[in-house]
Length: 207
Image (tube, rainbow, N blue to C red; front, top):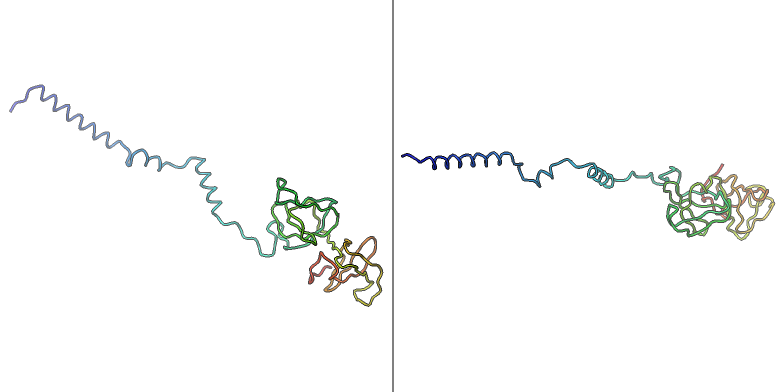
């Protein structure tokens, strides 16, 4: 059976269109455009976000119980105010509100927490807040919390009393035994019963 030239041209054209469709199908990415985008490596910004998320998910290093995470010193512990004025803030940073102002240089303070350059402290009444570490000193002091404290020549209740210290007087700690502390105040030195002082733990020994 013979075909006319017009039919032969139409059949040839159909074969070429079919072959072109196969080539286009093979060239197309599997899964389409959306799948190709999902398979691309993350950009620098996306990689940074992933790293940040991983860092947030990672557990923070655990501090040793009883030791400050910054200084590795005991918590709680006692220090003294280095200056005649120290702002105690609600949080560890200059942007936090000032809740309290300490105004006695040398007064004892109790450190209860640490964060970077900040220490959370409290006085003998429990008032305080976060103070910059530069305002604090490791020199030990104590405050007389008894109505009257006697300074003795020796660490014994029967020894000679050299001077009396009223409540609120700040003394410098020179030495502490189990029940007594040797202190200095206004040029006077003597032994004071430890229970009359705030700024030293009952079982603390200082040499």
